[in-house]
Each structure stands twice: as structure tokens, then as C-alpha cells.
Length: 231
Ligand SMILES: N[C@@H](CCC(=O)N[C@@H](CS)C(=O)NCC(=O)O)C(=O)O
Image 1 (cartoon, rainbow, N blue to C red):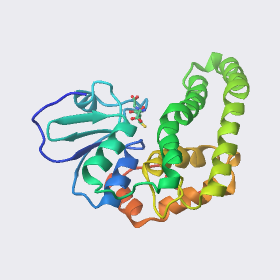
Image 2: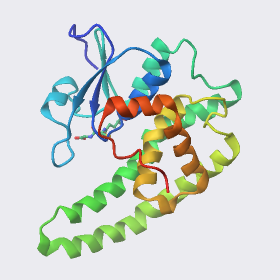
Image 3: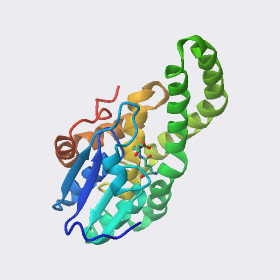
């Protein structure tokens, strides 16, 4: 990403109802001082021009910190923990591989499937009335054939892992980068399709939501639709 001299302190450029919420949670856990600049999604859900001016990719989260401008959740979590973590929220030795895996799995595999489902639902919804039934049929068939079986595998896999690892994905006493990354995917999934998910995943999301740091992040971030109680 780029460099500039516009900021000397850590700023989270925060988009409502977005992945940047997990950065606020991480920073609240670390009790690091930071600024939030808020941006509001446009009517179609996309990023406003002011955020694109900071991050030409047009995505949230993005942070600025001194001359660093950095996008991509995984990179940001790694950067923040590396610079401000002082070793906190590190996985125990035995959980390092799980931490590595889930930190990358979130955006590499799980989120693309969840976004694919979201888009398949949006296409018919946003199409002209006359073609909507046909598009609904095509996209729900595609969803059933392509997305549902893959998401079912993810749900089973995560549920099984959570039934073995204890409270946190890397098996330690507190969250690690794996949890900061997975929080958004799982809370969004619980909000959208709770019927697909087992009790361990729902308990895990509740555990995250119950943390004082998470609650502070919610207060500071404002509008966020994925923090409703898991059913
Ligand atoms: N893999 C990226 C995904 C970023 C992303 O797609 N963010 C969404 C918000 S959750 C976004 O900015 N959407 C607005 C848009 O694409 O216009 C990351 O984790 O940072």
C-alpha cells in the first residue's frame, strides 16, 4: 500500500456494517489509543468516494498509521499485533498452526463463499420485476448446487474444531489473530443463516460479543448489524 505524511497516529477508517468492526475489537482488547474516521456505505452497499480516496481498492478496513496506509484485514491484524501487541494475544505453542490456518482461512475460503451467497441473493432482488422470478430460480439453483454444499462443509469443520479447541480457535486463554479474523465471518453467518450452524459456533459468537472490549468497540463504531444475539 501507499505512504503519506497525513497522519501520525493510528486511525481506523471504519465503514458501517463491515469487516472494520473487528479492527475496533482488536484495538479495544489491546487498549491502544486510536482514532476512528467513519464512512457510510452508499445505498447499493458500496464504499463512498471519501474512503476510496484513502484506499484505492475501495475496501474497508483500511488503517493509516504515520506514513503507513494499509488495507486487507489479515495484514492489518498482523501489523497491529506486531507493532502494538507486545506479545499479547499470541497463540500458545500448541495452537500456532491452528492460529495460522484460521487467520488465513477466513478471507481465503470462508468469506468468499459467504459473499458468493450474498451476491446470488442480491442479483434477483435488484433486478427488474419482470425477470425476477427467473433470476431467483437460476440463482437459488446455483446456490443449492455450488454454495450450500461447500458452506455446509465449512460449518461442520468449524463446529468440530470448536468442540475440541476450548473457548478460542488457537486453544489458549484469550483470542488471537484467528479469532479477530473469524469474528466477522461467523457473526455475519449467524445473523444471516443461523439454521446452518451448530451450537458451538453460536456459543463462540456469544463469547466474543460478551467481552467488554467488544462492547466498547460496538459503542465506538456505531451502526453494526451483525452483533445481534445468536439464535
Ligand atoms: N479481504 C478484504 C475484503 C474487504 C472488503 O470486501 N470489505 C467490504 C466491507 S466488509 C467492502 O469494503 N465493501 C465495499 C465495496 O466493496 O464497495 C479484507 O479482509 O480486508
